[in-house]
Length: 138
Image (tube, rainbow, N blue to C red; front, top):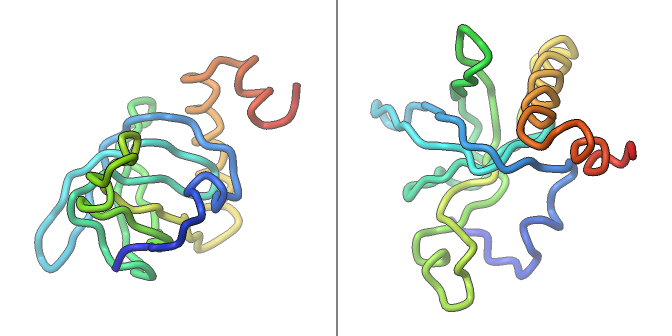
């Protein structure tokens, strides 16, 4: 099920995002998928995939973060999708097929750990100055 709203994906986001590519793995119908993030924020990520899950699907996935010894195991909910067909439409040259994921947390400690990790990644990939500006702290 694709999101057919005319609202731009950037307008639906509640958190600033950083372009980053991290490997993610998840299971769908007894098959493991290995895809990559396109960007990440404290509240979610976009997973590039030609076979997105349906909007509303909750699932567990692992995100491989180079700075961590073990992958982050996260729970997320598919908020919107871009199908292969939508990504190929005229005027969609910057769109990739995939799914926008909202992170779901079991506890405040889990949320803080993920937010701290994401903030560290954002600083590393953007630099302190750009990070501060993006987060409205400059």
